[in-house]
Length: 275
Image 1: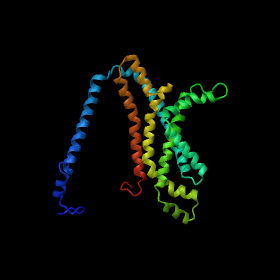
Image 2: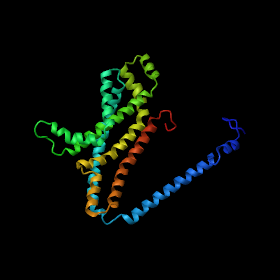
Image 3: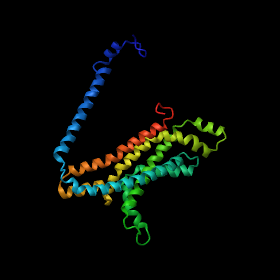
Image 4: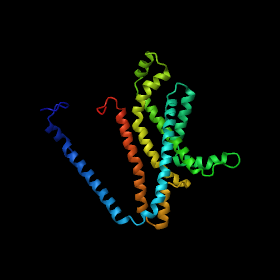
């Protein structure tokens, strides 16, 4: 039977494709991905069997647990603040007022255009020098972490929200206004729920990146996970035992976050089969 798109038979299409026909490409992809997965699995098994010092783990585990709790607290606080602030940044980006949209655009450009490490240094080293007299906060590292991560990721969340709003058809606003809704009510009840669905994947991905960005806090001596790795490695010259603990700690945060985002996406997919 002729192909419904090209008018040619499947055999003719396969001949035209040459060696890389659909079936060959499928098996090639399966073979290569399986080979890579097997190689990674063997490497991980070798590290766990040979390189990890299991006798060392009970000694260093308490400090990694303390670091894990600290990182989790920073992540939860910065995540809530960055998403909340990012929504307002996104709304400001689509504002009809040029001053509001201009200021929010400048904010986004600065925090997306400069490295997070630079922003951490600005907050950690720069702000105390601007304070008249003695800076009142002695342990400035953790507030620096929350402030820096919040400001940086609010810019990315804001752009995701702006893109989500832009993806909502203009007719949605027009229909809401025709029903007698004001601009704010139409945004709140019609546009933003649809925009949030559009932006959810990007926002969720950004929050997972936020978790990994906590590793930069080691440069300001915040006792997070990477700092614990450096301390253990310096004392024992054993890289793999603390690295495995660091990997487990990060994955125990990022994997549930990824699953949560998938769940929220399914819940927001109003027309999907999961509803």
